[in-house]
Amino acid sequence: MSREAFTAGVKPGGLTNTTQIRILLCYLIRTVAQPLSRQELESALLEQQLVNYFELAAGLADLEQQKLVLLEKGRYHITPEGRKVADLLLTDLPRSVREQAVQAAVLAQQYARKAAENQAVVRHTRDGWQLDCRIQELDREVFSLSLLMPDQATAEAARDAFIHKGGDFYKILLAMFSGSGTLAAEWLQKL
Image 1 (cartoon, one colour):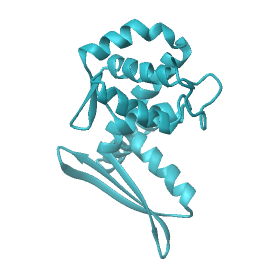
Image 2 (cartoon, helix red, strand yellow):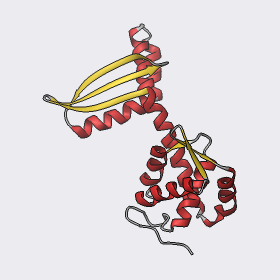
Image 3 (cartoon, helix red, strand yellow):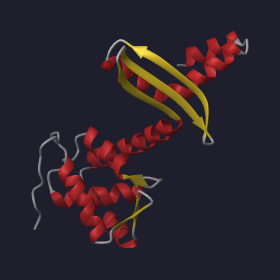
């Protein structure tokens, strides 16, 4: 007997059946090459409006309790039993949902990796909004920059852009400072 899930925040075509949500979670954890964190799963599935937050949380807890997935070092791993469930029941999920979920999960992982290297924090100061950017390599800060921004929305947009393109920004600055203006111009054109 399948149980209907909460539907708040779920777009038409998203999953509103508790069993399907659990199958999707098993399928995602099994399919994506690198183990997913809870934050990456939430980011992927909630931003695409494929499931409701409460159903996602309950589904993950159920899968852990049933030993279909294991949580190790903050990342979910599929068990052999979970792999069987994902393989056997994957056709119970609409193909479009599977494809959207996998693509969103991969993008969430890429963003998390970039965010670890290209760190950016928005904070409110008495002068307005400040964006503090840093690039870390091998546990060492190689670049930092602080900018005063006109408002919170602009600061948050700049933060997201730095996370995505901070490495490119750093390369361009290095090229300019080292006298390679032509190389910097070439990199700017590629952006």
